[in-house]
Length: 462
Ligand code: NAD
Image (cartoon, rainbow, N blue to C red; front, side, top):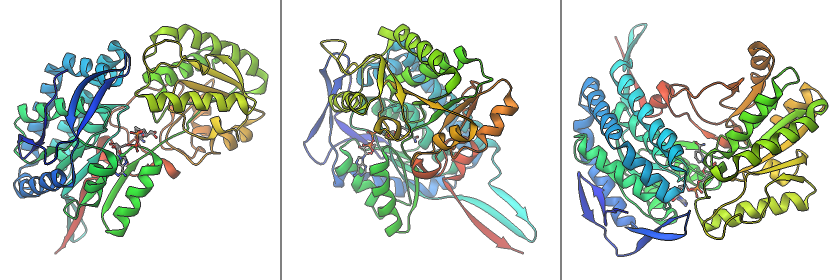
Protein backbone atom coordinates (compact mmCIF):
# COMPACT_ATOMS: atom_id res chain seq x y z
CA UNK A 1 0.00 0.00 0.00
CA UNK A 2 1.12 3.50 -0.77
CA UNK A 3 2.32 5.44 2.27
CA UNK A 4 3.99 8.81 2.86
CA UNK A 5 7.07 8.70 5.04
CA UNK A 6 6.53 12.22 6.37
CA UNK A 7 4.00 14.48 8.03
CA UNK A 8 1.67 16.84 6.15
CA UNK A 9 2.52 20.20 7.74
CA UNK A 10 2.15 23.69 6.32
CA UNK A 11 0.88 22.41 2.97
CA UNK A 12 3.72 19.96 2.27
CA UNK A 13 4.99 16.51 3.22
CA UNK A 14 7.90 17.07 5.63
CA UNK A 15 10.33 14.57 7.12
CA UNK A 16 9.45 13.53 10.68
CA UNK A 17 11.65 14.76 13.51
CA UNK A 18 12.41 11.22 14.70
CA UNK A 19 13.05 7.89 13.01
CA UNK A 20 10.50 5.62 14.71
CA UNK A 21 7.85 4.05 12.51
CA UNK A 22 4.43 2.43 12.96
CA UNK A 23 3.65 -0.84 11.17
CA UNK A 24 0.31 -0.89 9.38
CA UNK A 25 -1.20 -4.39 9.35
CA UNK A 26 -3.96 -5.88 7.19
CA UNK A 27 -6.16 -7.53 9.84
CA UNK A 28 -7.64 -10.00 7.34
CA UNK A 29 -4.27 -11.72 6.78
CA UNK A 30 -1.99 -10.27 9.52
CA UNK A 31 0.53 -9.03 6.91
CA UNK A 32 2.40 -5.72 7.26
CA UNK A 33 1.26 -3.54 4.36
CA UNK A 34 3.05 -0.25 5.06
CA UNK A 35 4.99 1.86 7.54
CA UNK A 36 4.28 5.44 8.57
CA UNK A 37 6.35 7.72 10.80
CA UNK A 38 5.63 7.77 14.52
CA UNK A 39 5.47 11.48 15.31
CA UNK A 40 6.93 13.07 18.40
CA UNK A 41 6.18 16.22 20.40
CA UNK A 42 8.51 18.04 18.00
CA UNK A 43 6.34 17.15 14.97
CA UNK A 44 3.22 18.15 16.88
CA UNK A 45 4.78 21.48 17.78
CA UNK A 46 5.69 22.17 14.13
CA UNK A 47 2.13 21.31 13.06
CA UNK A 48 0.51 23.50 15.74
CA UNK A 49 2.77 26.42 14.72
CA UNK A 50 1.76 25.95 11.08
CA UNK A 51 -1.92 25.88 12.08
CA UNK A 52 -1.48 29.02 14.22
CA UNK A 53 0.29 30.85 11.38
CA UNK A 54 -2.50 29.96 8.92
CA UNK A 55 -5.29 31.02 11.30
CA UNK A 56 -5.63 34.79 10.66
CA UNK A 57 -6.04 34.42 6.89
CA UNK A 58 -8.48 31.50 7.20
CA UNK A 59 -10.57 33.36 9.81
CA UNK A 60 -10.71 36.31 7.42
CA UNK A 61 -11.80 34.13 4.48
CA UNK A 62 -15.49 34.71 3.74
CA UNK A 63 -17.78 31.81 4.71
CA UNK A 64 -18.87 31.47 1.07
CA UNK A 65 -15.24 30.91 0.05
CA UNK A 66 -14.70 28.41 2.87
CA UNK A 67 -17.87 26.65 1.69
CA UNK A 68 -16.48 26.48 -1.85
CA UNK A 69 -13.23 24.89 -0.59
CA UNK A 70 -15.18 22.28 1.40
CA UNK A 71 -17.35 21.54 -1.65
CA UNK A 72 -14.17 20.98 -3.69
CA UNK A 73 -12.86 18.70 -0.94
CA UNK A 74 -16.11 16.73 -1.14
CA UNK A 75 -15.65 16.44 -4.93
CA UNK A 76 -12.10 15.12 -4.49
CA UNK A 77 -13.39 12.52 -2.02
CA UNK A 78 -16.01 11.51 -4.61
CA UNK A 79 -13.35 11.21 -7.32
CA UNK A 80 -11.15 9.09 -5.03
CA UNK A 81 -13.95 7.01 -3.53
CA UNK A 82 -12.62 3.69 -4.85
CA UNK A 83 -9.14 4.37 -3.49
CA UNK A 84 -10.57 5.37 -0.10
CA UNK A 85 -12.64 2.19 0.14
CA UNK A 86 -9.67 0.00 -0.82
CA UNK A 87 -7.45 1.71 1.75
CA UNK A 88 -9.99 1.33 4.57
CA UNK A 89 -10.45 -2.33 3.64
CA UNK A 90 -6.69 -2.88 3.68
CA UNK A 91 -6.00 -1.35 7.09
CA UNK A 92 -9.30 -1.84 8.94
CA UNK A 93 -10.42 -5.09 7.30
CA UNK A 94 -14.00 -4.05 6.50
CA UNK A 95 -15.49 -5.96 3.54
CA UNK A 96 -15.14 -3.86 0.36
CA UNK A 97 -18.88 -3.24 -0.23
CA UNK A 98 -19.20 -1.89 3.34
CA UNK A 99 -16.11 0.29 2.83
CA UNK A 100 -17.58 1.68 -0.38
CA UNK A 101 -21.06 2.36 0.98
CA UNK A 102 -20.22 3.46 4.52
CA UNK A 103 -16.52 4.23 5.06
CA UNK A 104 -16.23 6.19 1.81
CA UNK A 105 -19.89 7.13 1.29
CA UNK A 106 -20.74 8.70 4.66
CA UNK A 107 -17.77 11.15 4.75
CA UNK A 108 -18.82 12.40 1.31
CA UNK A 109 -22.31 13.10 2.67
CA UNK A 110 -20.91 14.82 5.76
CA UNK A 111 -18.42 16.94 3.78
CA UNK A 112 -21.29 17.95 1.47
CA UNK A 113 -23.47 18.88 4.44
CA UNK A 114 -20.76 21.24 5.77
CA UNK A 115 -20.24 22.85 2.38
CA UNK A 116 -23.94 23.75 2.64
CA UNK A 117 -23.81 24.81 6.29
CA UNK A 118 -20.72 26.99 5.84
CA UNK A 119 -22.62 28.94 3.20
CA UNK A 120 -25.92 29.20 5.07
CA UNK A 121 -25.04 29.37 8.80
CA UNK A 122 -25.93 32.59 10.63
CA UNK A 123 -22.48 33.64 11.89
CA UNK A 124 -24.04 36.91 13.05
CA UNK A 125 -27.34 37.63 14.80
CA UNK A 126 -29.12 40.58 16.38
CA UNK A 127 -30.28 40.18 19.99
CA UNK A 128 -31.99 43.35 21.25
CA UNK A 129 -29.38 46.11 21.20
CA UNK A 130 -26.54 43.65 20.55
CA UNK A 131 -24.96 42.00 17.57
CA UNK A 132 -23.67 38.52 18.40
CA UNK A 133 -20.86 37.12 16.25
CA UNK A 134 -20.02 33.41 16.08
CA UNK A 135 -16.24 33.36 15.70
CA UNK A 136 -13.90 30.40 15.22
CA UNK A 137 -12.43 28.90 18.38
CA UNK A 138 -8.93 28.91 16.85
CA UNK A 139 -6.53 26.00 16.46
CA UNK A 140 -8.16 22.58 16.82
CA UNK A 141 -6.32 19.45 17.95
CA UNK A 142 -8.30 16.52 16.53
CA UNK A 143 -7.64 12.98 17.80
CA UNK A 144 -9.52 10.18 16.07
CA UNK A 145 -9.99 6.39 16.41
CA UNK A 146 -9.74 3.64 13.80
CA UNK A 147 -13.25 2.21 13.64
CA UNK A 148 -14.72 4.68 11.10
CA UNK A 149 -11.37 6.13 10.09
CA UNK A 150 -12.43 8.64 7.46
CA UNK A 151 -15.86 9.50 8.89
CA UNK A 152 -14.37 10.45 12.24
CA UNK A 153 -11.79 12.69 10.55
CA UNK A 154 -14.35 14.42 8.32
CA UNK A 155 -16.83 14.83 11.20
CA UNK A 156 -14.20 17.04 12.89
CA UNK A 157 -12.29 18.63 10.01
CA UNK A 158 -15.28 19.68 7.87
CA UNK A 159 -17.08 21.68 10.62
CA UNK A 160 -13.76 23.11 11.84
CA UNK A 161 -13.02 24.36 8.31
CA UNK A 162 -16.56 25.70 7.99
CA UNK A 163 -16.17 27.59 11.27
CA UNK A 164 -12.86 29.16 10.21
CA UNK A 165 -10.62 27.08 12.50
CA UNK A 166 -7.30 25.53 11.53
CA UNK A 167 -6.52 21.95 12.47
CA UNK A 168 -3.87 19.47 13.53
CA UNK A 169 -5.04 15.87 13.18
CA UNK A 170 -3.56 12.89 15.04
CA UNK A 171 -5.31 9.81 13.60
CA UNK A 172 -5.39 6.33 15.13
CA UNK A 173 -2.22 4.28 14.76
CA UNK A 174 -4.11 1.37 13.14
CA UNK A 175 -5.50 3.42 10.24
CA UNK A 176 -2.99 6.13 9.27
CA UNK A 177 -3.14 5.43 5.52
CA UNK A 178 -6.74 6.66 5.27
CA UNK A 179 -5.64 9.82 7.09
CA UNK A 180 -2.74 10.34 4.66
CA UNK A 181 -5.14 9.91 1.75
CA UNK A 182 -7.39 12.54 3.32
CA UNK A 183 -4.42 14.93 3.61
CA UNK A 184 -3.79 14.42 -0.12
CA UNK A 185 -7.44 15.27 -0.80
CA UNK A 186 -7.18 18.45 1.30
CA UNK A 187 -4.11 19.46 -0.72
CA UNK A 188 -5.81 18.69 -4.03
CA UNK A 189 -8.86 20.72 -2.95
CA UNK A 190 -6.66 23.82 -2.64
CA UNK A 191 -7.22 24.36 1.09
CA UNK A 192 -4.53 26.92 2.01
CA UNK A 193 -1.23 25.68 3.47
CA UNK A 194 -1.30 25.21 7.25
CA UNK A 195 -5.09 25.16 7.56
CA UNK A 196 -5.03 21.36 7.87
CA UNK A 197 -2.02 19.46 9.21
CA UNK A 198 -1.46 15.75 9.86
CA UNK A 199 0.83 14.13 12.41
CA UNK A 200 0.75 10.32 12.55
CA UNK A 201 1.93 8.70 15.76
CA UNK A 202 1.15 6.86 18.97
CA UNK A 203 -1.60 8.06 21.31
CA UNK A 204 0.47 8.45 24.47
CA UNK A 205 3.21 10.28 22.52
CA UNK A 206 1.85 12.38 19.63
CA UNK A 207 -1.77 12.34 20.87
CA UNK A 208 -0.85 13.44 24.35
CA UNK A 209 1.54 16.13 23.04
CA UNK A 210 -1.30 17.53 20.93
CA UNK A 211 -3.83 17.46 23.79
CA UNK A 212 -1.35 19.23 26.10
CA UNK A 213 -0.05 21.80 23.59
CA UNK A 214 -0.53 25.42 24.69
CA UNK A 215 -1.13 26.47 21.10
CA UNK A 216 -4.27 24.33 20.78
CA UNK A 217 -7.54 26.10 21.66
CA UNK A 218 -9.93 23.14 21.39
CA UNK A 219 -9.25 19.42 21.69
CA UNK A 220 -11.79 17.31 19.83
CA UNK A 221 -11.39 13.66 20.72
CA UNK A 222 -13.17 10.49 19.65
CA UNK A 223 -12.16 7.25 21.27
CA UNK A 224 -12.37 5.29 24.48
CA UNK A 225 -13.89 6.67 27.65
CA UNK A 226 -10.66 5.93 29.55
CA UNK A 227 -8.52 8.15 27.30
CA UNK A 228 -11.36 10.69 27.02
CA UNK A 229 -11.37 11.20 30.79
CA UNK A 230 -7.64 11.88 30.72
CA UNK A 231 -7.98 14.36 27.84
CA UNK A 232 -10.92 16.07 29.57
CA UNK A 233 -8.83 16.48 32.74
CA UNK A 234 -5.86 17.90 30.79
CA UNK A 235 -8.09 20.34 28.92
CA UNK A 236 -9.88 21.34 32.13
CA UNK A 237 -6.61 22.12 33.88
CA UNK A 238 -5.65 24.43 30.99
CA UNK A 239 -9.18 25.94 30.71
CA UNK A 240 -9.25 24.76 27.12
CA UNK A 241 -12.37 23.81 25.16
CA UNK A 242 -12.89 20.07 24.76
CA UNK A 243 -15.30 17.84 22.83
CA UNK A 244 -15.43 14.14 23.67
CA UNK A 245 -17.13 11.39 21.64
CA UNK A 246 -16.66 8.25 23.71
CA UNK A 247 -17.93 4.72 24.13
CA UNK A 248 -21.44 3.29 24.25
CA UNK A 249 -23.55 0.32 25.32
CA UNK A 250 -26.76 1.14 23.54
CA UNK A 251 -30.12 -0.58 24.01
CA UNK A 252 -32.39 -1.86 21.26
CA UNK A 253 -35.79 -1.86 22.97
CA UNK A 254 -38.41 -4.03 21.29
CA UNK A 255 -41.86 -3.24 22.71
CA UNK A 256 -44.49 -6.01 22.53
CA UNK A 257 -46.47 -4.26 19.75
CA UNK A 258 -43.44 -4.18 17.40
CA UNK A 259 -42.78 -6.28 14.31
CA UNK A 260 -40.55 -8.70 16.20
CA UNK A 261 -38.86 -10.38 13.22
CA UNK A 262 -37.94 -7.05 11.66
CA UNK A 263 -36.73 -5.53 14.93
CA UNK A 264 -34.54 -8.53 15.73
CA UNK A 265 -33.18 -8.83 12.16
CA UNK A 266 -32.27 -5.15 11.88
CA UNK A 267 -30.93 -5.22 15.44
CA UNK A 268 -28.54 -8.10 14.76
CA UNK A 269 -27.35 -6.52 11.49
CA UNK A 270 -26.76 -3.23 13.34
CA UNK A 271 -24.33 -4.95 15.71
CA UNK A 272 -22.57 -7.11 13.10
CA UNK A 273 -21.88 -4.23 10.67
CA UNK A 274 -18.21 -3.15 10.87
CA UNK A 275 -17.63 -6.35 12.89
CA UNK A 276 -19.29 -4.80 15.92
CA UNK A 277 -16.74 -1.98 16.06
CA UNK A 278 -19.32 0.78 16.20
CA UNK A 279 -19.58 2.96 19.29
CA UNK A 280 -23.32 3.51 18.72
CA UNK A 281 -24.15 -0.20 18.08
CA UNK A 282 -27.25 -1.54 19.85
CA UNK A 283 -25.41 -4.29 21.68
CA UNK A 284 -28.16 -4.93 24.24
CA UNK A 285 -31.43 -6.23 22.78
CA UNK A 286 -34.30 -5.84 25.26
CA UNK A 287 -37.25 -8.17 24.66
CA UNK A 288 -40.51 -8.68 26.60
CA UNK A 289 -40.56 -12.02 28.45
CA UNK A 290 -43.60 -13.19 26.43
CA UNK A 291 -41.61 -12.91 23.18
CA UNK A 292 -38.18 -13.75 24.51
CA UNK A 293 -37.75 -17.32 23.25
CA UNK A 294 -38.94 -16.40 19.78
CA UNK A 295 -36.53 -13.43 19.68
CA UNK A 296 -33.62 -15.65 20.74
CA UNK A 297 -34.36 -18.09 17.89
CA UNK A 298 -34.67 -15.23 15.37
CA UNK A 299 -31.42 -13.62 16.55
CA UNK A 300 -29.48 -16.89 16.37
CA UNK A 301 -30.76 -17.45 12.85
CA UNK A 302 -29.90 -13.89 11.77
CA UNK A 303 -26.36 -14.20 13.18
CA UNK A 304 -25.82 -17.56 11.47
CA UNK A 305 -26.94 -16.05 8.17
CA UNK A 306 -24.50 -13.20 8.62
CA UNK A 307 -21.75 -15.81 8.74
CA UNK A 308 -18.87 -15.17 6.38
CA UNK A 309 -19.89 -11.65 5.41
CA UNK A 310 -18.28 -10.33 8.57
CA UNK A 311 -14.81 -8.75 8.43
CA UNK A 312 -12.03 -9.23 10.99
CA UNK A 313 -11.46 -7.08 14.07
CA UNK A 314 -8.86 -4.37 13.65
CA UNK A 315 -5.89 -5.90 15.49
CA UNK A 316 -4.62 -8.75 17.63
CA UNK A 317 -5.32 -6.85 20.86
CA UNK A 318 -8.99 -6.28 20.00
CA UNK A 319 -9.23 -9.92 18.87
CA UNK A 320 -8.02 -11.15 22.26
CA UNK A 321 -10.17 -8.62 24.12
CA UNK A 322 -13.43 -9.53 22.37
CA UNK A 323 -12.83 -13.27 22.70
CA UNK A 324 -12.09 -12.67 26.39
CA UNK A 325 -15.46 -10.95 26.82
CA UNK A 326 -17.23 -13.89 25.15
CA UNK A 327 -15.50 -16.29 27.55
CA UNK A 328 -16.49 -14.07 30.46
CA UNK A 329 -20.14 -14.07 29.30
CA UNK A 330 -20.14 -17.87 29.36
CA UNK A 331 -18.41 -17.91 32.76
CA UNK A 332 -21.02 -15.52 34.23
CA UNK A 333 -23.87 -17.80 33.10
CA UNK A 334 -25.07 -16.34 29.79
CA UNK A 335 -26.11 -18.87 27.13
CA UNK A 336 -24.36 -18.87 23.74
CA UNK A 337 -26.85 -19.41 20.91
CA UNK A 338 -24.62 -18.37 17.99
CA UNK A 339 -20.87 -17.89 17.52
CA UNK A 340 -18.44 -18.20 20.41
CA UNK A 341 -14.86 -17.44 21.44
CA UNK A 342 -13.14 -19.78 18.94
CA UNK A 343 -11.41 -18.05 16.02
CA UNK A 344 -13.33 -19.17 12.92
CA UNK A 345 -10.30 -18.88 10.59
CA UNK A 346 -6.63 -19.71 10.94
CA UNK A 347 -5.49 -16.34 9.70
CA UNK A 348 -6.83 -12.90 10.41
CA UNK A 349 -8.48 -11.44 13.50
CA UNK A 350 -11.93 -12.91 12.88
CA UNK A 351 -14.67 -13.55 15.46
CA UNK A 352 -17.95 -15.26 14.51
CA UNK A 353 -21.20 -13.31 14.84
CA UNK A 354 -22.12 -14.11 18.43
CA UNK A 355 -25.47 -14.05 20.22
CA UNK A 356 -25.95 -14.48 23.96
CA UNK A 357 -29.30 -15.34 25.57
CA UNK A 358 -30.19 -15.29 29.29
CA UNK A 359 -28.11 -12.16 29.81
CA UNK A 360 -28.96 -10.23 32.98
CA UNK A 361 -28.44 -6.46 33.18
CA UNK A 362 -25.60 -6.59 35.68
CA UNK A 363 -23.40 -9.05 33.76
CA UNK A 364 -20.08 -7.72 32.46
CA UNK A 365 -21.15 -8.32 28.83
CA UNK A 366 -24.25 -6.18 29.47
CA UNK A 367 -22.33 -3.34 31.11
CA UNK A 368 -18.99 -2.97 29.32
CA UNK A 369 -18.34 -2.00 25.72
CA UNK A 370 -17.14 -5.14 23.91
CA UNK A 371 -16.49 -3.53 20.49
CA UNK A 372 -16.99 -6.81 18.66
CA UNK A 373 -19.79 -8.74 16.88
CA UNK A 374 -21.58 -9.71 20.08
CA UNK A 375 -25.25 -9.05 20.89
CA UNK A 376 -26.86 -9.78 24.26
CA UNK A 377 -30.57 -10.53 24.62
CA UNK A 378 -31.99 -9.30 27.91
CA UNK A 379 -35.53 -10.09 29.15
CA UNK A 380 -37.83 -7.42 30.62
CA UNK A 381 -41.21 -7.75 32.33
CA UNK A 382 -42.86 -4.36 31.66
CA UNK A 383 -42.01 -0.93 30.22
CA UNK A 384 -40.63 0.49 33.46
CA UNK A 385 -38.39 -2.54 33.76
CA UNK A 386 -37.24 -2.05 30.14
CA UNK A 387 -36.47 1.61 30.83
CA UNK A 388 -34.53 0.82 33.99
CA UNK A 389 -32.42 -1.72 32.07
CA UNK A 390 -31.97 0.56 29.04
CA UNK A 391 -30.74 3.41 31.26
CA UNK A 392 -28.75 1.14 33.58
CA UNK A 393 -25.20 1.67 32.28
CA UNK A 394 -22.68 4.49 32.57
CA UNK A 395 -23.13 5.16 28.84
CA UNK A 396 -25.78 7.02 26.82
CA UNK A 397 -24.74 7.31 23.20
CA UNK A 398 -27.51 5.80 21.06
CA UNK A 399 -30.37 3.31 20.99
CA UNK A 400 -33.41 2.06 19.14
CA UNK A 401 -37.08 1.63 19.99
CA UNK A 402 -39.51 -0.53 18.04
CA UNK A 403 -43.30 -0.40 18.55
CA UNK A 404 -46.53 -0.85 16.61
CA UNK A 405 -46.63 2.89 15.91
CA UNK A 406 -44.08 5.69 16.04
CA UNK A 407 -45.90 7.62 18.79
CA UNK A 408 -45.58 4.71 21.24
CA UNK A 409 -41.87 4.34 20.39
CA UNK A 410 -41.28 8.10 20.72
CA UNK A 411 -42.91 8.15 24.19
CA UNK A 412 -40.44 5.50 25.34
CA UNK A 413 -37.44 7.10 23.55
CA UNK A 414 -38.07 10.43 25.32
CA UNK A 415 -37.46 8.68 28.65
CA UNK A 416 -34.12 7.19 27.59
CA UNK A 417 -30.89 8.79 28.84
CA UNK A 418 -29.17 8.78 25.47
CA UNK A 419 -28.18 11.14 22.66
CA UNK A 420 -29.66 9.43 19.58
CA UNK A 421 -32.54 6.98 19.16
CA UNK A 422 -33.70 5.33 15.93
CA UNK A 423 -37.47 4.96 15.88
CA UNK A 424 -38.74 1.82 14.13
CA UNK A 425 -35.55 1.51 12.10
CA UNK A 426 -35.07 5.24 11.36
CA UNK A 427 -32.36 6.10 8.82
CA UNK A 428 -29.00 7.83 9.38
CA UNK A 429 -29.26 11.61 9.08
CA UNK A 430 -25.94 13.43 8.54
CA UNK A 431 -27.51 16.68 9.82
CA UNK A 432 -28.74 15.25 13.15
CA UNK A 433 -26.55 15.96 16.21
CA UNK A 434 -24.56 12.91 17.29
CA UNK A 435 -23.10 12.57 20.77
CA UNK A 436 -23.50 11.18 24.21
CA UNK A 437 -25.31 11.57 27.49
CA UNK A 438 -23.47 10.52 30.67
CA UNK A 439 -19.99 8.99 30.12
CA UNK A 440 -20.52 8.72 26.36
CA UNK A 441 -19.20 12.20 25.94
CA UNK A 442 -19.38 15.95 25.93
CA UNK A 443 -20.53 17.95 22.93
CA UNK A 444 -22.11 17.01 19.61
CA UNK A 445 -20.87 16.25 16.11
CA UNK A 446 -22.58 16.65 12.70
CA UNK A 447 -24.98 19.27 11.38
CA UNK A 448 -25.28 22.76 12.80
CA UNK A 449 -24.78 21.48 16.38
CA UNK A 450 -21.44 20.02 15.29
CA UNK A 451 -20.48 23.34 13.68
CA UNK A 452 -21.34 25.26 16.88
CA UNK A 453 -18.67 23.23 18.76
CA UNK A 454 -16.00 25.08 16.75
CA UNK A 455 -17.41 28.54 17.39
CA UNK A 456 -17.31 30.99 20.28
CA UNK A 457 -19.53 34.02 20.63
CA UNK A 458 -18.74 37.69 20.94
CA UNK A 459 -21.45 40.29 21.60
CA UNK A 460 -21.24 43.96 20.72
CA UNK A 461 -23.75 46.29 22.41
CA UNK A 462 -25.14 49.39 20.72
P1 NAD B 1 -8.45 5.01 22.08
O1 NAD B 1 -9.06 5.92 23.06
O2 NAD B 1 -7.42 4.06 22.52
O3 NAD B 1 -7.78 5.82 20.88
C1 NAD B 1 -8.43 6.86 20.21
C2 NAD B 1 -7.40 7.87 19.74
O4 NAD B 1 -6.77 8.44 20.89
C3 NAD B 1 -6.26 7.29 18.90
O5 NAD B 1 -5.88 8.22 17.92
C4 NAD B 1 -5.16 7.11 19.91
O6 NAD B 1 -3.89 7.13 19.35
C5 NAD B 1 -5.37 8.31 20.80
N1 NAD B 1 -4.83 8.18 22.15
C6 NAD B 1 -4.63 7.06 22.90
N2 NAD B 1 -4.07 7.37 24.08
C7 NAD B 1 -3.94 8.72 24.11
C8 NAD B 1 -3.46 9.65 25.09
N3 NAD B 1 -3.00 9.25 26.27
N4 NAD B 1 -3.50 10.96 24.78
C9 NAD B 1 -3.97 11.40 23.59
N5 NAD B 1 -4.42 10.57 22.63
C10 NAD B 1 -4.42 9.24 22.89
O7 NAD B 1 -9.68 4.29 21.41
P2 NAD B 1 -9.68 3.24 20.23
O8 NAD B 1 -9.41 1.93 20.82
O9 NAD B 1 -8.84 3.72 19.12
O10 NAD B 1 -11.21 3.37 19.73
C11 NAD B 1 -12.24 2.62 20.21
C12 NAD B 1 -13.06 3.41 21.21
O11 NAD B 1 -13.53 4.62 20.65
C13 NAD B 1 -14.29 2.69 21.64
O12 NAD B 1 -14.42 2.78 23.03
C14 NAD B 1 -15.42 3.42 20.96
O13 NAD B 1 -16.66 3.35 21.54
C15 NAD B 1 -14.92 4.78 20.91
N6 NAD B 1 -15.57 5.51 19.82
C16 NAD B 1 -16.48 6.48 20.09
C17 NAD B 1 -17.11 7.15 19.07
C18 NAD B 1 -18.14 8.23 19.32
O14 NAD B 1 -18.42 8.98 18.42
N7 NAD B 1 -18.70 8.33 20.47
C19 NAD B 1 -16.80 6.85 17.76
C20 NAD B 1 -15.86 5.87 17.52
C21 NAD B 1 -15.24 5.21 18.55
